[in-house]
Length: 311
Ligand SMILES: Cc1ncc(C[n+]2csc(CCOP(=O)(O)OP(=O)(O)O)c2C)c(N)n1
Ligand SMILES: [Mg+2]
View 1 (cartoon, rainbow, N blue to C red):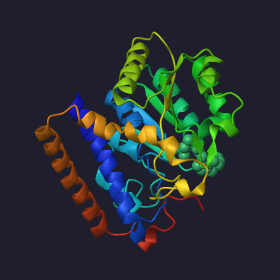
View 2: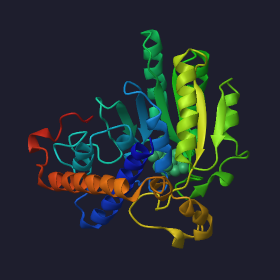
View 3: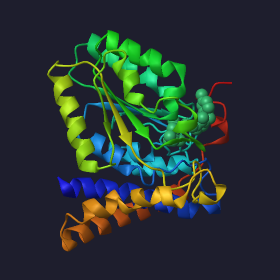
View 4: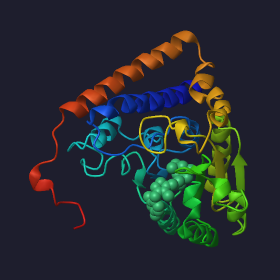
C-alpha cells in the first residue's frame, strides 16, 4: 500500500516541479495552478476509489488527474497546446479530461464542476449503477451559490457522491477569515443533513481511511452523499511556478508546519531505500519521456481553429 501511495505522491510532485522548471521557457501555453503541498488530498482520495468511480475537479487538478490515473503524456501535451493533449490542445492546464480513467472534467470557472458532479451522481443512481462520484472543490468554491444548491439536491436525492473540499485557506490571496464569518464549512453540509467531517493534518493515510470508509458506506447504501473538508496548504503562488511570500498576504511562518509535514518525504520514509529508489527512477524516466513527447508532438492544424469551441 505504501509503495502505491509513494509512487503517486512522488510522481505528482516531480511532474509539477518539472512544470515549474519548464514554465519560464514559454513552451507551456496555459496558466498553471500547482498543487505542490496539496498532493496528499488527491492521492488519499483516489487510492480509496474503485476504477469505475469518477471525479470532477477544479482548475488546480494536475494532482487529481494523475492520482486518478489520467494519462500523463496527454496532460503534458495539453499544457503545451499540442494536438495530442487531453483536450486536443485547446483547454490547457485548467481543462483536463480522461474519460477512460474517470476524470470527467475540470474547469477554470470556480464552482462549475460541483453541479456537473451532482448531475453525474444522479445519472448513476437513476441507472442503479454501483459507482460513485467525487466532487473536488476549493474553499473558495464554497463561496459560489451553486455550492449550496448542489449540496441540497445531492442530500435530497441521497446521491452517491463524496464532496472533497480542499481547504488551503485561501481564495487567490484572500484568507477564509476575510470571507466567512464562521470558519466551519462542514456545518454547511450538515445543514442539509449530510454527514461531514474535517481532516486537519493533510495526512495521506488518514484521508485514504476516511474516504474508504465513506466509499464503503455509500456502496452498501448506508448513506447518500458525504462531505469531507481536507485542510491543506499551497506552497507556490496561486497561479504560476514561483513562491509568493513577498506579496505579504501570508507568511513563511504560516507555511512552515505544512512544509515540515511534507507527505512525499513522510510516506517515502516508510519504504526501504532500494524500493524507494526503484520507484523514483521509473517515475523520473516516465516524466522525461512525457515532456520529450509533448515537445515533439504537433500543434493542432489551422483548420482545427474553430472546431470544438463555442464561437
Ligand atoms: C466564477 C468565478 N469567479 C471568480 C473566479 C476567479 N478566481 C479564480 S481562482 C479563485 C479562487 C478560488 O479559490 P479556491 O476555490 O479556494 O481554490 P484554490 O485556488 O485555493 O485551489 C477565483 C475567485 C473564477 N475563476 N470563476
Ligand atoms: Mg483555496
